[in-house]
Length: 503
Image 1 (cartoon, rainbow, N blue to C red):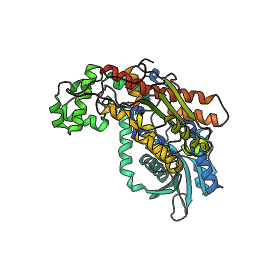
Image 2: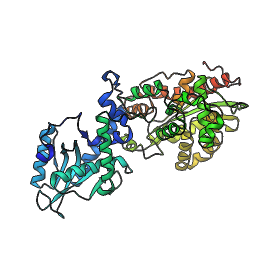
Image 3: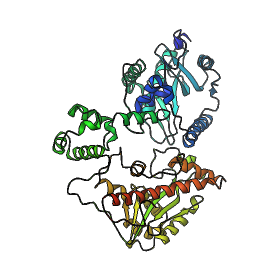
């Protein structure tokens, strides 16, 4: 206990919790806010998806421990001091495994709760002819750097408590177990902890890395801070590293600091692509409206029909970054469940809904039938996600490959059409940035892509009314693309499909 506490009381404001390693590495501004931001700036943004992820993570950990270490002693978290004492008693008793173990080194101003300590008898410690080793359990497919750093901090605390520092730690992932070596992370860990102390003590004030790069409860405050400062990361193609480069090369700390530089000057300082982007996007902010370079002739693809397409999928079909999606889906199978289309000529929204993965092929057949001969159709989408979904479905369902292949030839990424012609005063060219700038509003503030997925799972679990919100959200995504197309055409004096940008 003396080693653990150093005679100090644990203080969450003064001591670094190991789980905050992620925030320290990815969003240190949020940690700074914990200490110094006004309390009334906190905005709690609840997200059922995130809570489901956390719950599934806890279930994954508990199931893995139960299957692999059924006799592990679990440390109940009634009070943290009591849990610490119970952890130390279990270590002194030499039990084979300890789950939810409290590890403190308040002399070093750190503490945390490790997933699992496993007894090893191949080296002695102050506990006896054995020692414990860290096993962290993460519901992810790939090992992340912050996970290894967090395990390294647990390993350091464990080493000080038991008088022997293991040279390696294990991280249990969804499909495998990774072994990492403590010495590979020890020096960086020292640097991170020193950085955290500077933040805590007011010696260092990190900046947000860009819009929406800080998680709640400080996301809104961080975004407003960027807006008020006309931060350089509000320019497309500018992240934290590029921001620092612009500052060092030009002495410009804000977007309006770029106004005085010519196009040639920016292209000389940076490569041509970045210099051009900086110049025209800064000028778009200066004008407060979309602009084009002199002599640019803006044009949008046009055919007899114009459809604006958006898919909703249960799980991120193509990315293991959405680690838990497959397990979250009640059917445990990723699939496209909703195809939405805004038909400009009909001034109407059309959708095809699948209730379950086994109905996915049915909605794609209906989609193919509705499009008809795609040669005379512009099928607009935003980014390439819909095209990749169609390719995946075509691979799984060969009888759909011909129809989807033909549709694919008529697909047009509206984001790329706009991005390569028009410079807009927005941080990026996501539809959630571009359409609102032009005046479009989604009807449901509480529904986004993740919430719509959870609503679909509610629908699969028997809540028939839940799917209506998802359908409305999908319709608004489709209408946002049409609104963007027709609004920009109106702005630049071009003909646009359908009835009106205001419809």
